[in-house]
Length: 256
Image 1 (cartoon, one colour):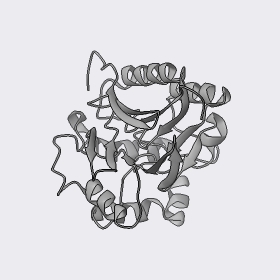
Image 2 (image 1 turned 90 degrees about the vertical axis):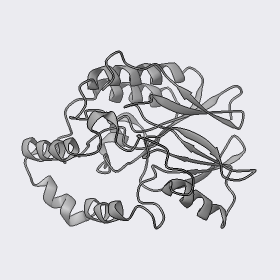
Image 3 (image 1 turned 90 degrees about the horizontal axis):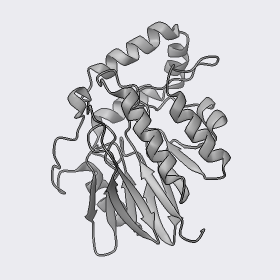
Image 4 (image 1 turned 180 degrees about the vertical axis):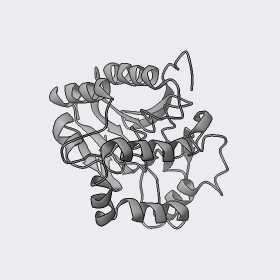
């Protein structure tokens, strides 16, 4: 660990979301954040749903996001590792994104030690016995034959179809699931983290997906951190000398 270096976590930027009117402004803001944190970053963890939709064809990739992709490549080229977790919106990242930008791809949860603390990391979708509806969708989205079949569809139609699907999601009005905190006894990721603690100790559970930024005690030694989003809250987490904090970056002028 480098002296005075920090580790940053962010998720749920949903770049290119058709339901939002300020995509360019949010992209510029996220690039500004990346540019800011790279100054003292030991590592950066992007915890899923950075893109609202992403699908890599063999010879084509989704249009847009060039500023973010360029910044990620610049950061990894400088020697700072960037960990990219696939979320439920960008589950179809294959080899293009890691090979072009240098990010380290994670498709599943990661258990690791950072700055002397034990971490349980993941996007947060479909974990435990709770998120049953998405578990079914995830089986469909990760099916190799269905991925192959989708890749046979012309990108113009396939991406239009995906954007229409996203446009009917809970992302309308910038909300998704971020309306309220449901309480520790009803938050699926909190319940999941508590279940995991019965098997193994972790100092920090860090997830995205829920779009509700929070930093709560699970017990005297463990905390649940949700990084929030870059749709409504513009929040991120930072690990500094083994201590996690939630912080808010600046918000765009035309939110949503």
